[in-house]
Length: 638
Image (cartoon, rainbow, N blue to C red; front, top):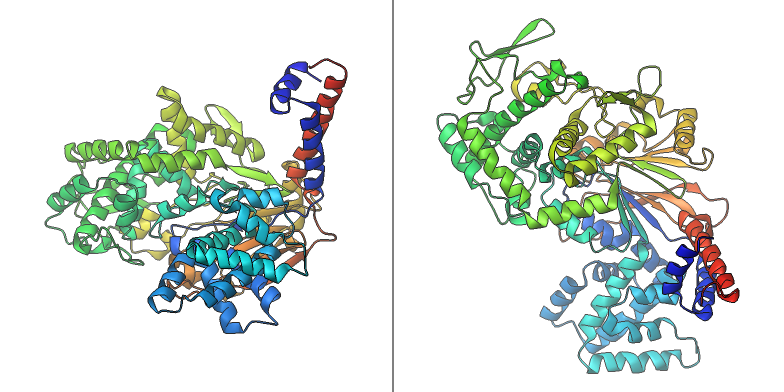
């Protein structure tokens, strides 16, 4: 082995004893059961619902409580204990205000929490659990969780709990214990795209994700839209603002990210003063708490940014003929004198004909006011410290796809043509398809943020294509019909047809070929996607291709729940099985609605860490440490 590498390794393990100790530690770890993985998709800013799913481990914590305390504690008290674990500070404040936070309640609650914590942490090493405990409480919690003397156990508990009460740290201790249970239940978190848009507070979701000990993100088209906006792409800046206007999400823009919308409000109010903008009234699914905006003004702002976006998108389409999207520049081909647009040889009348900023001879040119507005908005996006911090986190933890423990994770699709062959996309004169396409697009997504000059501009344009392009693996439809839906009455023009992938991927052999294409075992592997809401109320199933494919967009977003009939899915992969949690609509303050959990696949034998990707890394580390030991023994390294 390369001595240069071994010398670097020796800095971490400077003695034979330390290297041998780590070999023993890693050998023990790989024999433990694998941790529980949680898969979420299409969160779409629904911070309340998503945070509840995290805090409850999608219903698994309640199942553990029932398993541990089901024979000794009433159902109502188990429900209250679950709510305490999910929201410890809130629940204890309410108990304190009502005079119920007695020493007896504290004593009994700590005892019950310890039993639950022992159950959820049983398959982990003590050192792993200690790392998740607040430093000030490590000793106490470690002692309580690892009492081995059954004869004196109750007395030992009583003494420690009495000391906790007498020193006045009971509420802090209970809060830490509840958060430890939450943390231990979710070992690894996979987010399969679309954190942003439609829901009220994507920023709150990202704040929480940044606290997680092990999380990865597979980018969705809504994520890439925000990433491109943060990188300065004007069309995507307009896009994320337009969607926020459409769903009345002012809080995430102004309170969440400190983006200055005053210039847009002033411009819209002046430019569209004579227009009621009735077609642009927001779809109000959530109220703005911190930045309420009059709905009439919001409608004007929505129209103003929509017009700007259509102009900027038309410019991009003209700039990149290789994308073959000329037919999608409907705004540029509109006859503004007559108020019509021609599609497939037929003229359609616009539902809105008032466009005071449009020059009919050059419809894609921004007016002077629009140009100045976009300059201000671009600066606001680029200088939002919190937005940039969140976007860097998404880059650090994200990719176009992920292979993990024999599962292939990506948001949308692998573009296919009508024969089932991979579709090719031309990028700077070279064609890419399949895995090579996702790899190349991943490079460009990074260049859009981290590069400078021409490479950055080109990559930023590609980010827009990923948002809505017909061969985009993140979008996967033949068109994005927001022009037609907003301005044309003809319903047939509103249809967006899915890529052929969505038909072919329901075949077992196609999924097996895809798994093999990405270097995975086609017999044991699974494909896990989001992006397409599963309409369970219409009889659709999230499990397809004989259990090879999981589509886990079940409608966490309120915008989709009337379509899906439920309120989201969580796929849960523990050491025994794959399970699908089917969620009910989340109501703030009502936490007793436990999801329905379905067993979808039972493992032939319990999976240990040695059977996972982490196990392979541990095996490699052990081999390296053995080499280091030999180098010490041979005197090659002192």
